[in-house]
Image (cartoon, rainbow, N blue to C red):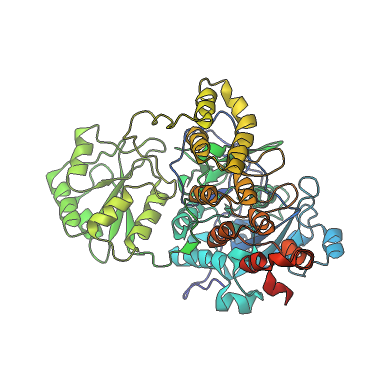
Length: 586
């Protein structure tokens, strides 16, 4: 249960039920049809330029289980006395809509009362989801970083209050394949940015969505937004319709459906007749680390927009304790008034330990030191936020200031790093280092990188080459292919990833390398087999240990099959025990 402290949700401020006007273009990456679908991404490698070859393998398995967390917002609001107020019972509304609940399938499967199931999305794939409602529901204008951290904690584990209120026990993160957060659009960009920093080592999709018009209205964007979010979280292993990276967006329109813009990063996915994922932009967690929720965030941070003629006395008053960090919205490329008295106030604040982070108030572009006015701002101790949005910069400040044991220098260094894909850092290096080694993998990688026309060929060849190299235990070839494409999670024609191939063959060194690159430990092939199950069947204990340490789990179906396997191949009991399956048969 997400409990605010002495807070009550206020009535909505946008009682508009008429059809909005067509969207105006505001930037190259503005949402067109699904404007309120954002993504929270895990820690991973630097984002790459938009790849001309696109596509992403679907998540395997006949069923995908999601947890939807309903915090409030316009999508579920109802009109009372001429204004919109948060409305309870969204699950009951969804049950009446065939696009959100297949009653016949739910009855045939004997699903619990609190479960909803979408119609088949592709073939026989089904998305089963549970909806949790916050107590109370919020107008998003009333939400704070406290509530957003509690959402992150809900994703991680049910907790005492949540278990008693919602009837769920144990870890939500282990129970579900993905998560959808239903949130008001006014502060959704802030929420997405906070969650992206609070959820470290995230390896499952967390998608935020909302609406400009209530879902039960005749003309509503809410139905398509929510359906798009469920499909993206359930069918694609993108821990990220148009789909934006959460810490890259800002709200740019209060009424039109095209409410959000990602000014400095293309969309991660585009929903049309099909769903196209820009996989080169999707960040994967590095290393087999478990999810960490950072609850110790700093709330004494602020946002100050500089304007022509701003008085030094006003800036001095704003920068007083208990403030510990400030995002300064500056002109153009990081410029600001260069009056000596104003610069002195900023210099004094930085000298007493206040972290000052500069972001441009322009929709596109980045903070640089091209002008004397910008250099003067940097000279008094103001750090560059490069192309971060103000929402992301504020969330990053809260996160960095909340990290224990860091010196002032350490905090500044952390602010200057790309932690969650929130910023594009200027390149400090020349062209990418040439591929090392002289093996077959290097030669193939060089061949595939010769021309732009080869990009289409890469999509066909790379998955098979990577799986073959993993099966053969060829680390050199895998590293060369990784330098070329960066993504070793691609599936071959059987739906197998290189991790499947390495686990089946028992190559612990290859498995370790793939896990370090953030490969999904729980991916399923077309037969529904996971790398862990293949390692168990092959009795590769070293591989089992690596996968378990990285968070791999046997699915409920695999656990049911474990009894049959134990009877048929009794000598493998030790492997099943390592995979935590044997206790289920006792």
